Image 1 (cartoon, rainbow, N blue to C red):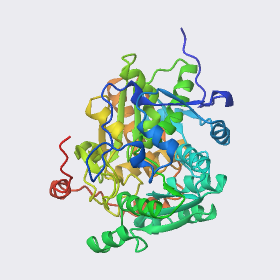
Image 2: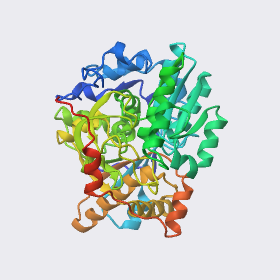
Image 3: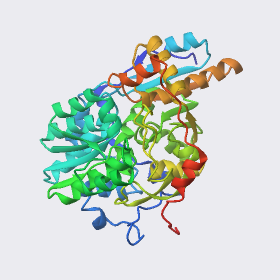
Length: 458
């Protein structure tokens, strides 16, 4: 049968927006290891997690059996303001590379937050409002999650307290102002406004911060203020669940034209974008129906998968959060301040870590200057200024397409374009001025962090 002419942009109809989230854990034979209470080292129960998270979100966090979970109608209606997101055929990029590969990208930047983060932010804000809470606290790296959550909280009239990684707070003032415009308070982390922040500043004077630091502060504020809960933009099972709308839409769009991807590529920091994009494809792989080459791309400056340890570790630098079994560089690891993207978390989603450990996907790390080379190439050819995070996936998509050029293989490549880079122009300026460097942690630096991993015999 002759291949249908594929349009530049494949749009779904409004009624094709997913009405259920897909829970990939239901199809995993080896389930992610449970969160552990840091005091007792026993699995965290629903009641253990109640002081930190919203009730309905805890149920989603702990549910590894239900494959499909209904999306509440109010969230569906909010999704319709910016979804479905287009799946774009990168014809111009293919032509410029002179590759036989077919390249597609799922573009998640069509909303004010400029990223995919709104898919989970609106869900978490909805459940907080439904529970009758006053507000929520969170952390943010590059600012995309904080922006998305401030938008969602504004919609539901919730207070929003954001702890922003200090280096990003200083480098991205306009992202900070978008959050404030939507009513959020934004504090650079680590700060002297919390007990844990003061301890981190004392131990690491002059630190530029990390997501682990910011998480510690946000959790402390949530648990010490009545009517508040903590929400997280990545890593957690509930977040990957909400982000599955990305992959579900992508698969529906591909199926419309009978397209089967060979390679699926996503950037990997904590796991929200990667987990969301690959979820239905990974489900097929787990069930033995298909065999995709799924690739996680991470920064060489923060290489959790490629150089980390698969072990129980704290999700935060202050060691106040539950322990998660994941690929980790150690909760005390703080990436270089010159690292431009938001992929600054020391660990990785437990779900994705288990899938990687079991061999269902592979991981590569890429250096920062190579990432920005790909970002500018993509911007000049495809006309979209990509976020630094997404540009990690672009780098490897281009590399895979060039391999096809060498071998003559006509592979179909799909990658996630998580959002736009208009608030990341300081990083682009550094690259254009030739002052961006490629920091790669030494084995000695990583070992020092590994030596501080908690001793858990599980």
